[in-house]
Image (tube, rainbow, N blue to C red; front, side, top):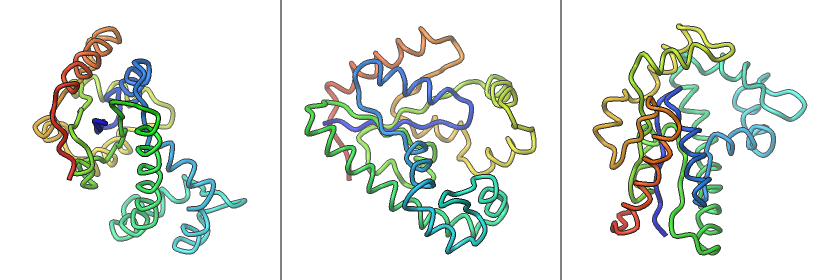
Length: 199
Protein backbone atom coordinates (compact mmCIF):
# COMPACT_ATOMS: atom_id res chain seq x y z
CA UNK A 1 0.00 0.00 0.00
CA UNK A 2 1.32 3.44 -0.97
CA UNK A 3 1.02 6.05 1.80
CA UNK A 4 0.59 9.71 0.82
CA UNK A 5 1.15 12.49 3.33
CA UNK A 6 -1.22 15.43 2.77
CA UNK A 7 -0.34 18.80 4.24
CA UNK A 8 -0.73 22.52 3.70
CA UNK A 9 -0.86 25.73 5.67
CA UNK A 10 -4.03 27.18 7.16
CA UNK A 11 -6.80 28.05 4.65
CA UNK A 12 -5.03 26.48 1.67
CA UNK A 13 -7.86 24.00 0.96
CA UNK A 14 -6.38 20.88 2.54
CA UNK A 15 -9.70 19.57 3.92
CA UNK A 16 -11.34 20.00 0.52
CA UNK A 17 -8.44 18.17 -1.13
CA UNK A 18 -8.67 15.36 1.44
CA UNK A 19 -12.33 15.11 0.46
CA UNK A 20 -11.36 14.59 -3.19
CA UNK A 21 -9.09 11.69 -2.22
CA UNK A 22 -11.92 10.16 -0.15
CA UNK A 23 -14.32 10.69 -3.07
CA UNK A 24 -11.90 8.65 -5.21
CA UNK A 25 -12.18 5.76 -2.75
CA UNK A 26 -8.91 6.39 -0.90
CA UNK A 27 -8.99 5.91 2.90
CA UNK A 28 -8.06 9.22 4.59
CA UNK A 29 -6.76 9.58 8.15
CA UNK A 30 -7.54 13.06 9.53
CA UNK A 31 -5.03 13.87 12.30
CA UNK A 32 -7.03 16.94 13.41
CA UNK A 33 -10.21 14.87 13.81
CA UNK A 34 -8.25 12.34 15.88
CA UNK A 35 -7.00 15.15 18.14
CA UNK A 36 -10.60 16.35 18.62
CA UNK A 37 -11.63 12.84 19.70
CA UNK A 38 -8.61 12.49 22.00
CA UNK A 39 -9.47 15.82 23.65
CA UNK A 40 -12.87 14.38 24.53
CA UNK A 41 -11.51 11.04 25.71
CA UNK A 42 -8.16 9.60 26.75
CA UNK A 43 -6.00 12.73 26.35
CA UNK A 44 -8.23 14.87 28.60
CA UNK A 45 -7.00 13.60 32.01
CA UNK A 46 -3.37 13.74 30.83
CA UNK A 47 -3.81 17.34 29.63
CA UNK A 48 -5.60 18.35 32.85
CA UNK A 49 -2.70 16.94 34.86
CA UNK A 50 -0.19 18.94 32.81
CA UNK A 51 -2.31 22.09 32.44
CA UNK A 52 -4.74 22.32 35.41
CA UNK A 53 -8.01 24.10 34.66
CA UNK A 54 -8.01 23.43 30.90
CA UNK A 55 -10.73 20.75 30.97
CA UNK A 56 -14.40 20.71 31.92
CA UNK A 57 -16.69 17.69 32.25
CA UNK A 58 -13.85 15.38 31.25
CA UNK A 59 -13.21 17.21 27.97
CA UNK A 60 -10.49 19.64 26.97
CA UNK A 61 -11.59 23.26 26.68
CA UNK A 62 -9.75 24.11 23.46
CA UNK A 63 -10.00 27.88 24.04
CA UNK A 64 -8.46 27.67 27.53
CA UNK A 65 -5.79 25.23 26.37
CA UNK A 66 -5.02 27.37 23.32
CA UNK A 67 -4.53 30.50 25.41
CA UNK A 68 -2.27 28.53 27.79
CA UNK A 69 0.10 27.25 25.06
CA UNK A 70 -0.22 29.85 22.27
CA UNK A 71 2.83 31.96 23.16
CA UNK A 72 4.68 29.46 25.34
CA UNK A 73 6.93 27.18 23.32
CA UNK A 74 7.80 24.94 26.29
CA UNK A 75 4.09 24.43 27.06
CA UNK A 76 3.37 23.68 23.42
CA UNK A 77 6.16 21.07 23.35
CA UNK A 78 4.73 19.55 26.56
CA UNK A 79 1.28 19.32 24.96
CA UNK A 80 2.74 17.77 21.79
CA UNK A 81 4.57 15.16 23.89
CA UNK A 82 1.19 14.09 25.30
CA UNK A 83 -0.84 14.19 22.09
CA UNK A 84 1.52 13.10 19.29
CA UNK A 85 2.14 9.52 20.53
CA UNK A 86 -1.65 8.99 20.83
CA UNK A 87 -2.24 10.38 17.32
CA UNK A 88 0.51 8.18 15.88
CA UNK A 89 -0.96 5.08 17.55
CA UNK A 90 -4.31 5.90 15.91
CA UNK A 91 -2.48 6.41 12.60
CA UNK A 92 -0.85 2.98 12.82
CA UNK A 93 -4.25 1.36 13.50
CA UNK A 94 -5.73 3.21 10.51
CA UNK A 95 -2.94 2.05 8.17
CA UNK A 96 -3.25 -1.56 9.33
CA UNK A 97 -7.02 -1.48 8.73
CA UNK A 98 -6.63 0.20 5.32
CA UNK A 99 -4.08 -2.38 4.21
CA UNK A 100 -6.23 -5.25 5.52
CA UNK A 101 -9.19 -3.89 3.54
CA UNK A 102 -7.13 -4.12 0.31
CA UNK A 103 -6.52 -0.39 -0.22
CA UNK A 104 -3.67 0.32 -2.65
CA UNK A 105 -3.29 3.95 -1.51
CA UNK A 106 -3.97 5.64 1.84
CA UNK A 107 -3.72 9.30 2.81
CA UNK A 108 -2.45 10.70 6.10
CA UNK A 109 -3.87 14.24 6.43
CA UNK A 110 -1.39 15.90 8.82
CA UNK A 111 -1.39 19.73 9.10
CA UNK A 112 2.10 19.87 10.68
CA UNK A 113 3.57 17.03 8.62
CA UNK A 114 7.01 18.55 8.02
CA UNK A 115 7.12 20.32 11.39
CA UNK A 116 6.73 16.99 13.22
CA UNK A 117 8.97 14.88 10.95
CA UNK A 118 5.96 13.05 9.53
CA UNK A 119 7.44 12.92 6.02
CA UNK A 120 9.55 9.93 7.16
CA UNK A 121 6.34 7.90 7.69
CA UNK A 122 4.98 8.34 4.15
CA UNK A 123 5.99 7.39 0.60
CA UNK A 124 5.30 10.79 -0.96
CA UNK A 125 4.05 14.20 0.17
CA UNK A 126 1.21 16.23 -1.35
CA UNK A 127 1.27 19.94 -0.43
CA UNK A 128 -1.94 21.91 -0.88
CA UNK A 129 -1.20 25.50 -1.82
CA UNK A 130 -2.72 28.77 -3.04
CA UNK A 131 -1.39 32.31 -3.52
CA UNK A 132 -0.91 34.30 -0.26
CA UNK A 133 -3.75 36.71 -1.03
CA UNK A 134 -6.18 33.80 -1.56
CA UNK A 135 -5.03 32.15 1.67
CA UNK A 136 -5.42 35.37 3.66
CA UNK A 137 -8.88 36.14 2.26
CA UNK A 138 -10.09 32.60 3.01
CA UNK A 139 -8.65 32.58 6.54
CA UNK A 140 -10.02 35.99 7.49
CA UNK A 141 -13.51 35.00 6.30
CA UNK A 142 -13.61 32.29 8.99
CA UNK A 143 -15.54 32.91 12.18
CA UNK A 144 -13.31 34.16 15.00
CA UNK A 145 -10.24 34.61 12.81
CA UNK A 146 -8.29 37.86 13.13
CA UNK A 147 -5.18 39.08 11.34
CA UNK A 148 -3.26 38.67 14.65
CA UNK A 149 -4.47 35.09 15.15
CA UNK A 150 -3.65 34.22 11.52
CA UNK A 151 -0.15 35.66 11.92
CA UNK A 152 0.39 33.57 15.08
CA UNK A 153 -0.77 30.40 13.28
CA UNK A 154 1.46 31.05 10.27
CA UNK A 155 4.44 31.72 12.56
CA UNK A 156 4.10 28.17 13.93
CA UNK A 157 3.92 26.62 10.45
CA UNK A 158 6.67 26.06 7.94
CA UNK A 159 6.40 28.70 5.18
CA UNK A 160 4.37 27.64 2.16
CA UNK A 161 7.36 28.18 -0.16
CA UNK A 162 9.44 25.69 1.87
CA UNK A 163 6.59 23.16 1.92
CA UNK A 164 6.24 23.45 -1.86
CA UNK A 165 10.01 22.97 -2.26
CA UNK A 166 9.87 19.73 -0.25
CA UNK A 167 6.70 18.36 -1.87
CA UNK A 168 6.48 15.46 -4.29
CA UNK A 169 3.14 16.76 -5.57
CA UNK A 170 1.31 20.09 -5.40
CA UNK A 171 -2.42 20.76 -5.47
CA UNK A 172 -3.16 24.41 -6.26
CA UNK A 173 -6.67 25.10 -4.97
CA UNK A 174 -6.93 28.65 -6.31
CA UNK A 175 -8.38 27.52 -9.65
CA UNK A 176 -11.61 25.98 -8.39
CA UNK A 177 -12.95 22.60 -7.25
CA UNK A 178 -12.91 20.81 -10.60
CA UNK A 179 -9.31 21.75 -11.27
CA UNK A 180 -8.23 20.57 -7.79
CA UNK A 181 -10.18 17.32 -8.25
CA UNK A 182 -8.36 16.74 -11.56
CA UNK A 183 -5.00 17.35 -9.84
CA UNK A 184 -5.89 14.69 -7.23
CA UNK A 185 -6.77 12.20 -10.00
CA UNK A 186 -3.44 12.91 -11.69
CA UNK A 187 -1.57 12.25 -8.41
CA UNK A 188 -3.37 8.92 -7.97
CA UNK A 189 -2.35 7.88 -11.50
CA UNK A 190 1.27 8.84 -10.76
CA UNK A 191 1.61 6.98 -7.45
CA UNK A 192 0.31 3.76 -9.03
CA UNK A 193 3.79 3.27 -10.52
CA UNK A 194 5.97 4.98 -7.89
CA UNK A 195 8.29 3.07 -5.52
CA UNK A 196 7.61 3.22 -1.79
CA UNK A 197 10.17 5.03 0.34
CA UNK A 198 8.91 4.87 3.93
CA UNK A 199 11.71 4.71 6.48
